Length: 414
Image (cartoon, rainbow, N blue to C red):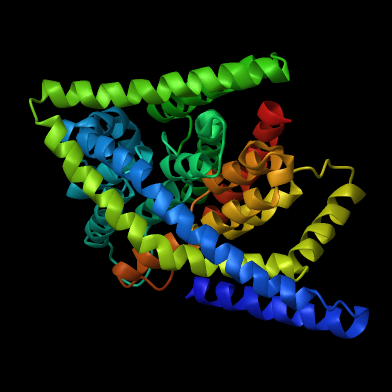
């Protein structure tokens, strides 16, 4: 429903702005530019969707091997003690714990198709120990924040889109996105813990959060001491090595489990064709709306207003053209994808996907999750109407991710 209003809003506002420009500034070209945008963006949406087929097929095949080979189970074991402390009101042997860990692990690996059913199952199991069926429990809110913070080891769809948009190294945003999503997750956990009076200095919680924070801090410290050229070179090398290591580890696990990794790869890869075809109408719809919004001049007005506010408090505004992607993401994943693509296309003269704005748009898309969508789907599935502070802490996590993305983006790419 949110995307319904966003899509219509883009087109209606664009029409109003264009009409004002025509009547008051005699801009006779604005409507022609908007019409041309519908042609250009429709073509772009179709070409991207078709071009995505091969890449999507390969990665879904690899992910299927990881799933069948037990990588999700391995990760579940790693975070088990941590989860037990974050959800003190859930009995230790309750099935909700297992489903939540599996959902969280699937999200980390970018297994969206597997993560959502597991998440809904976990929410249903949490509802079974909810005394007030129409009101969200502490455990349900913590679980939602872990989902809406968007922590992911492999930002698969973003890297695939960057590849199709001509990035020299599509994975150069891998480490920056990891840092930003980690920040949003930690801030989200802290915010919920304050509400729920969870002891963050518990030995297990402190060991997990403290250890990971220290590791991330060392990464930032290391890169902050490098020149821009060295940052690009080291980031490119480390990202490529890490991603290929993950691929090989999936294959090795599959071989150890004695599963037919080739057949499982083919099984998973088939889904790439289905997904690529399914997203064609959605991508074209949002790209056309955003393209018309930009062609009308409405996007420029929004950006100019943000630039004016930031410059008045002496903040560098080079990242602002990418900011609409960040504002869209909590509302709509497909909307944010379309916004990122449109922003990168608009930056073709500056380097497109490899421009500073193009990379920032990619990072903003990966910095947060579709907070409102996740809350609506997960709570709606169990008929919860009173969400308490879930939206508040979810948006706090989103804001933390956006702010961190700006800091990390300047560190790595500016």
